[in-house]
Image 1 (cartoon, helix red, strand yellow):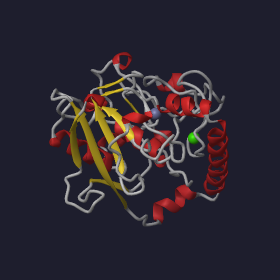
Image 2: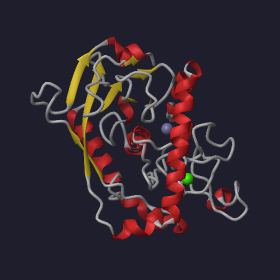
Image 3: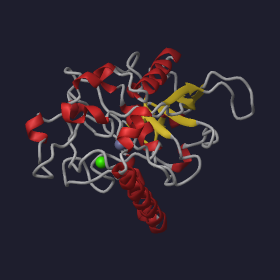
Image 4: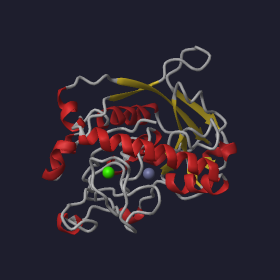
Length: 296
Ligand code: ZN
Ligand code: CA
């Protein structure tokens, strides 16, 4: 599985949000729960990640950063379907809120976000321009017209983290499936599985709380990058500190050579605090979508 070669940078500076009150991603927790029951799946995943890491290290050595500046990369368009599970409350978010989210995804994956201006100077030349476009699906699996938003009045809007919750997933090889729900039992804002690790085909999808979708309606600008983060996982990006520990615990690696090892942060540290914790000579990088920090 080929990794996205460039890290995803960065999230919005949003001063009025308190990171302590915001929920976080449970991708690591959900993958661990599955791997605990299926050691073979874990071994296979780690083998593939190691191979990808080695390939990435070689590509980095050969200067892929430089090549990317001159190459015209193709734009891949990813059809997205939103399965809005609701019981008639605020969780039944508007089409406009969903469209706002789709536009944010495309903006962030094409380096069109204005906040690249505040990236710390050491990392400015590493800002990823992934060139993936996201669009609401226009055809459903049967070939009928759709606007890519399917609403279901279903108590599963109170998501239980069970595999039996994934009852509406469209073929995962043709769509990015996003379940929008009212609550998630594990307490997450959202989660997904890295490629090849979902416990079932139907679970190869993203689950997200309705109030972490887009920047308008029930959400806000400060929570509008959660799906940028989850789509990163869905496309095989790990947390920047790795899959094996929580942010702020131990120095780790995401398998992509362009960013240095880090222990991760729950909120933006001062540049001095981020400097050289894991390596005496290297400033750690914290302005990245694959962090937990909400940049407040
Ligand atoms: Zn995550
Ligand atoms: Ca890295």
